[in-house]
Length: 208
Ligand SMILES: [Zn+2]
Image 1 (cartoon, helix red, strand yellow):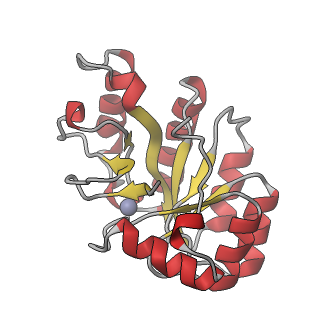
Image 2: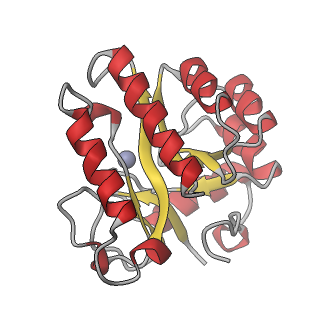
């Protein structure tokens, strides 16, 4: 069965995790993630953080906590977003929140893998960590996989990194904001792995 680990598309016929914003009607999504994206980190981050804390403490009616799959996407981005120090503080606070609510995290890391891993290592996260939209080289993939993290790949990926993640049973696929269908992403990955798209299985950490 197709599973889209991370999508911004709010109309999705496939199973997957919709990355919501604070304005969304969460009751529309069977599975969703919520967090402060590094691009949205500015001097007002504490207000957004307070909103996140408020939602977790006093969830809206409906099975909010059952459907909230992860805190995400969160992380750090050197090419876009606010001051790196503020990004780090915001990221750390959200990791602490994921830790206390025992939620997985979906990570956005652009040119910040080392910084992000340093932040992650300060927590004994009880749930999974997924690096989404992974385009890194095999050495980087091997490093993250060795730490027990999961990797999620969109339409653009390094074939060898994809293979490493697949062989470790730590590979997810996603559409993110590509506009592509998850079926097409599965086809691209299957081609690269020289298997049939129907033979692709992803870890069941969000579905079982
Ligand atoms: Zn995204």
